[in-house]
Image (cartoon, rainbow, N blue to C red; front, side):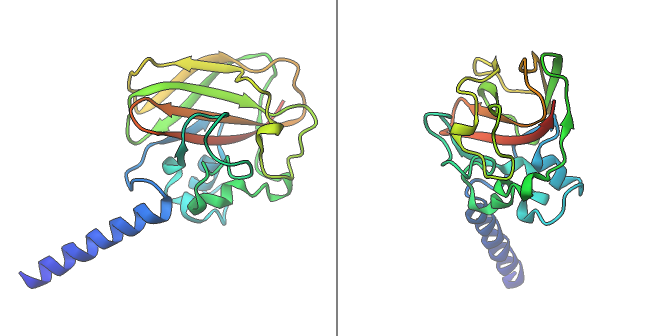
Length: 197
């Protein structure tokens, strides 16, 4: 009996440590898979040296209210979460890039491990001339999302898809920031996808 109680206490301690380390609850949530995000590339081994996000790509959660609130500049891709700071490292502009056609229709996809009542999914793109070798800031992004998919409090399915149009007039390397805003908590999930138009 004493051994079982000790094992349970150790298990609780590890869960608490995971919650502290990631800055949010230990359960998973979701991340962008199309266009493939930095989380997706880390989770499937396309990119290595990603730290905790390799095992928790779905947990990149931070304060909602972007762009007026939310993560600080330079920590947007990690949702302001120190445990996932590797996502903010631009790696000299050398993250794998998704090939996309500017202005084309696109099916955006997120993989979910916990479904939440949702306000919306919003997608931002970098301005022309942004520097992919620097951490992402608000000033790097176009001020308005090029796509916003309202959810009106509905919960997304395990594989969420949203139809939309990619931004017009873009060429070369850019970054798309996806923000999944949760309706019934103070948080949102952040996902950065490196792209080439």
